[in-house]
Amino acid sequence: MEDIYNKIYSVTNENMKGLRKIDLTKEAFSRWSNIEYDKIDMNYLYDTDNESFLEAAYLALLNRTVDFKAREFWKLRFNDNKEEFQRELLNTIINSMEFKLNNVEVINNKYNYNKDENISSNSTEKGIGEFCNDLLQEDIKMVNSLHYIDPYKNITSDRKVTGKIIIFIKKVIRKLLSWYITPMVEQQNEFNAFTTKVLNSINEKIVAIEVDRIQSEGNFNNKLLETYSNFNNKLLETALNFNNKLKAAEENISNQFREIEEKKKINLDYVAFENKYRGSQELIRSRLKVYLKYFEKENNILDIGCGRGEFLELLRENNIQAKGIDVNEEMILLCKEKKLNIANVDALKYLSELEDNSLGGIILTQVIEHLEPNYLIDLISLSYKKLKPGAYFIAETINPQSLIVFTQAYFMDLSHIRMIHPYTVKFLVEQEGFKDASLEYFSEVPESVKIPQINELPEDFNQAMVRLNNLVYGSRDYAIIGRK
Image (cartoon, rainbow, N blue to C red; front, side, top):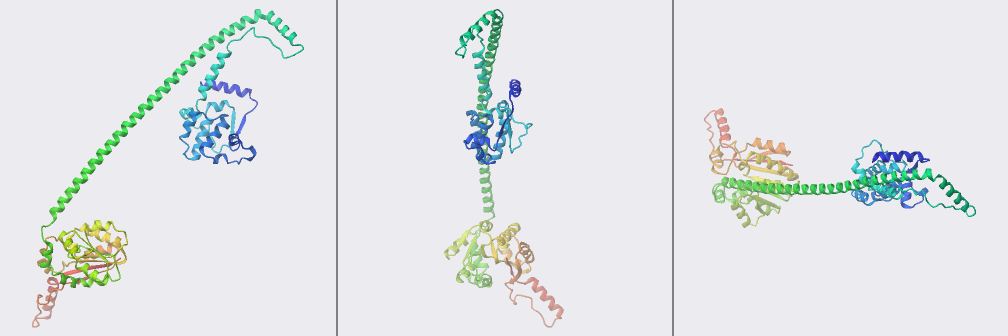
């Protein structure tokens, strides 16, 4: 088919006096909008929306409006990038056989169409619409209507005076030459009849092929849609099964975690234990007063592992807003009885949900010896993020440099995991970025418990006793104090 069109195109070229030139920046938009040619801005056409550009391009380049099939094809692209839409539309039209038959030259095409650029036949066919098929059908109709040549066609003349004479002379000439012309005309009619019959037969086959193609395309599309639907359903089913399995796995892990935590819990009345062995609440309150100075003029203090709430009470008495968190239910109930601001929540979980730079201070008293190393490191890191600049982080714990704690405080509490050397926790705090980190020592052992010095013995011996007392009876507690 393309060879036929190429032949038509070459013949048309020979018969045309010159090319019809199309200026995309002017004439196309002018013809489409009926605006006078000399009033069109050079770049106005390219600034129109995609739908308007489609109408203008068809009128200018194909000398017709957009057919339904082509409009449906390009309508899907109206929301595309303007330059991409214009480039593909122009290249599709210029690549089409219909455009070639129009004998048109395009100038001022800013997209610099490359004739060697590959344009898919499918895109060209859909983009140009049903031109080729319509052209063929029109040709078939023309062949069917003109294939018979009448050798006895009525002779007429437009001349009023000499017309009858001219008609008579032509009839005489036709009569004299009929013996020669009539057989040739009959032969030509016979050839035309057979040619028309063949063309009609070919056309019927083309139509049948087109019908089969459309049906096959429809069947293919239906099959493709069915395959896509099945795949989509299978994908959704797989995703649903995966989500269900994932949810079941999460629940299983959560249950196992709870079981582990339950096994780790010690069945001990911790409130009663602290009342008997740590000291009364009044005694602890008096010891903790030393930390109040670090939280003066601050608010939103967090007491992690607040226990019986002694320090929370001190903060409340000094009009300092604070909140305590703990995971021991007995301690939570005791603090609630005191009307303290308290929550039963894990420290890392609670800190992770706070805004950065929001806390006015953090304190942990006798807590870090209950923590695993990684948990402690994460706790210090999160604390630094959540504290406001200038706020203090304080952690009080048992002093492993004093051997007496091994015979008393440390091994008495079943929930203790390990003691932390003061230099270790100081290193962790400084590594995180806390400034002015310092160690303070508390809970001195009474002199009456220490090994006494004997004046009658040499001074070196007494100095050795001092060192021994510091090792065995040193301060039982220490605190790391760091400022953000």
